[in-house]
Each structure stands twice: as structure tokens, then as C-alpha cells.
Image 1 (cartoon, rainbow, N blue to C red):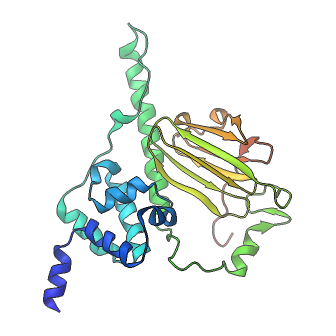
Image 2 (image 1 turned 90 degrees about the horizontal axis):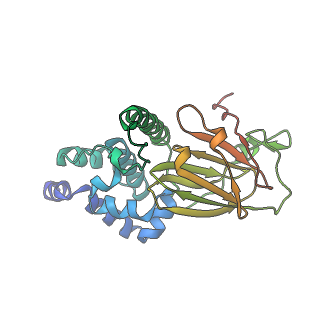
Image 3 (image 1 turned 180 degrees about the vertical axis):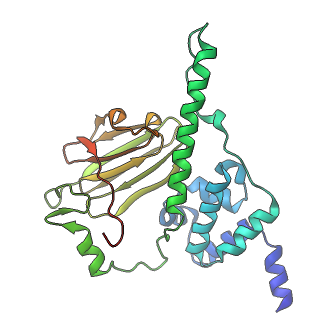
Length: 263
């Protein structure tokens, strides 16, 4: 027994995650779909390429969620990650920006740094919020009746927006010009998209409207509903995030705050 434990401890976090995924009969794309991750994130975790994942808080969140999916110990994997000393820092130079006109560059740089700082703080806050959420289990189970009842309040959704005619679906396309967190759920509260996406990435999904959309870096994300642009810049908050509802006609409006458990 001591020999087996010692051999397991010598394995890196990436090797253990890969072994757990393969034992569960999952391919990389299948694991990424269950985790709501980009497949490149799964590959980077298994290769222990932590530098490609950004800040330390992102890496820890990804490791914890992947460990829970494959049934491994999050604490042990986080310990291996800390032992390897591969803590990374976010690379703010990856966030593109336009240079101000000559002669005013030294005036514009503090403002740009301030905006980048606000965007980074918002991203960190969202990652910390979702760290405690459980990934989709290997064997899915139907939601409890209480959960389905809570999703509908007085003939509408839990967000207070009216439910569209049964069968109606809205197609939503997201394009990222820089690093940003994004999360999308449909009228029933079912999560359609969640993760951190790099510049150049794009995602297309569909669901029953209204769609609840949250982005962490509003200027870096463009939306199209049913092929029509959906402007959200005017709905951005001071921290650079946006929380909006998109109805069946593709109109965006501010999303109400989610009710806390027990409210």
C-alpha cells in the first residue's frame, strides 16, 4: 500500500487528471463539454502548461472543477500544483488596446491601465464565485422538483422576465476580441455556456429566451442574436462587466440580480 501511494504522489496533477478522464471513458472534447471549458483548457491542465491558463486563481479553479469531475481529490491536486511552484501571473499585455495620438500617449496610459485593472478584478471575482459550483456529473440526473419549481415564478422566469412561447429558441453568437469571462443560461436556468475565453475565440449556441448573458470584459465581446447585432456597451457596469437579458426578438435589457438561496 505504501508503494502504491508513493507512486501516485510522484505523478503530476496533469497525469492524474488524464488518467481519471480515460478511466471514465471520456475524450478531451467530452470532458470539456461537461466542464463547460474550452478544450484547450483541458489539454493545458493535462500537460501542466499552467502558463497558458493565466492567473493562479484561474488555474486553481480549473484544477478543482476537473478533479471533481473525474472523482480525484481536489486538495491533493492543488497540493501537487503548489509543490511544483508553477504559480503564474496574469499577462496584461495580452489585452489589446489602441495607442493614443502622438503627444497624448503619456496622458492615456494611466487610463488604459486603470481599465485593464478593473477588467481583471471583475474576472477574478467571477472565477471565485463559480469555484464552489459542482461540474456536471458523469451520470446525469434529472433536476429535483423543487429546483424546477424555483425556476418559474408567477408565470415567468426566476429573473422576472416573461417566458417565450414553447418551442421558441434564440440563437446567440459571441465573439471575443480579448480575454473575457462569459456565462449564458436559458429561460429555465439551464447553463449553456461558461468559461474564460481568449481573444479570437467565438461560440454559437441556442436556447429558450430570454437568455441571461454575463460577460466580464464588455468592450471585448460582441453579440449577435438570430444574426442581428445586439449592442450591450450601454449596459456595462462601472467594473466593465455586463449582465443582460436577451429576448426572443434579440433586444437586450439589464438583468435583475439573482435571488440568494432562501430569499
